[in-house]
Length: 140
Image (cartoon, rainbow, N blue to C red; front, top):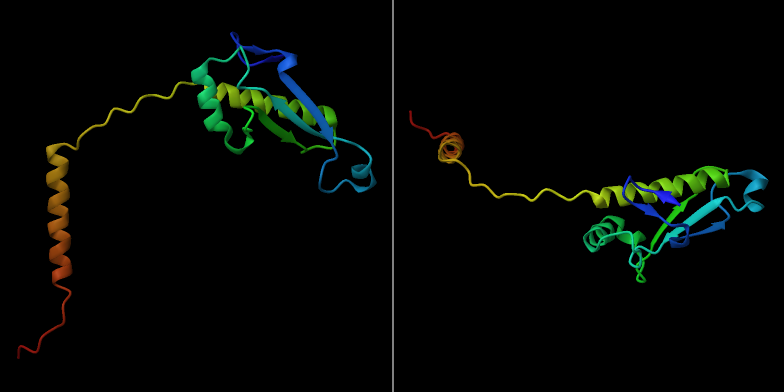
């Protein structure tokens, strides 16, 4: 069971773990031990997540979201299968916690009259500076 927060826990039947050989250095050990973990969470079918949370989770997951509605997280940082397993579970929990946060609605505002006047005054001043950068004439 994976605990996300006080209200949400994910059951073990929703998580599928598969173990493969990790890439990278490891000597002879890398060819024998399946230490990389691929954690698959069927997010679209999960009864523990609200539809709004699922939509945010899909956007946050990006390429890790499959066409079937599952999130696939691969962990192969360490040479220990147990540590990789914990890392994958923690990454999934962090992703779900981030999806639980409802983004604050942005309220569009208009620039103040003073800021508009200051902007236009700065533009006029800058234009005057640039206008003085012409060729120097022969007025002797």
